[in-house]
Length: 224
View 1 (tube, helix red, strand yellow):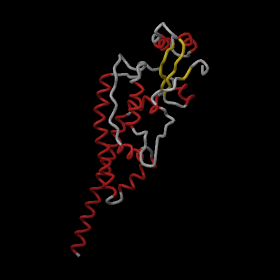
View 2 (cartoon, one colour; view 1 turned 90 degrees about the horizontal axis):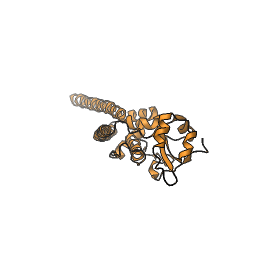
View 3 (cartoon, helix red, strand yellow; view 1 turned 135 degrees about the vertical axis):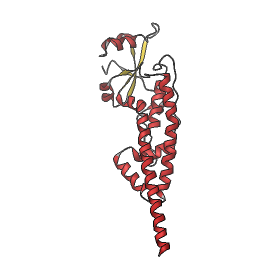
View 4 (cartoon, one colour; view 1 turned 90 degrees about the vertical axis):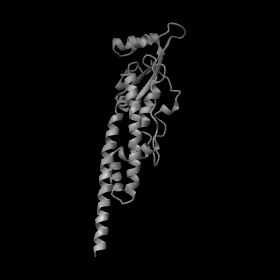
């Protein structure tokens, strides 16, 4: 099937998964960036459901910076250590609140997009095997109508793909194949919002606890 399928290179370079994803401060696989990558893919004409376009979220460097720590266990432990350092923890607490605020603002966009299109994957084809083979979360394919006979897809999926043929010209058909990771990038956004909320509570309790400790310590010194 590799010989039959012609991979169409996306014209939107920012969706190319080979681009740099991280530097020393900002992690570019944060929930907002991943969500917007999918929205750009969906907004391509071949993927739109009933011609409806979806809105991208507002990007945030603060979220990218904070997510550089919260994306894994080791980073979370380092972040927790920062929260235990006086003054520095106050800075990180403020940054965390700004990130959580941005996630809440973008959650409204998430809800609005869900209301507009319940299943934005309706004109795409899920195939984990092809994505694993190509080491991508999604691929855009272009092939002749007659070549669809060799695809190992269900009858309904083949019919959906064939219906895209105009019946004239070179009779090429374009369609997108995706995996579960791409689906998680879209539907999983609220989970990150909950994680940031938990970290906000933890950081608040630490900051308040340290302030109380400092006040008690100062009173003790004054009494002496």
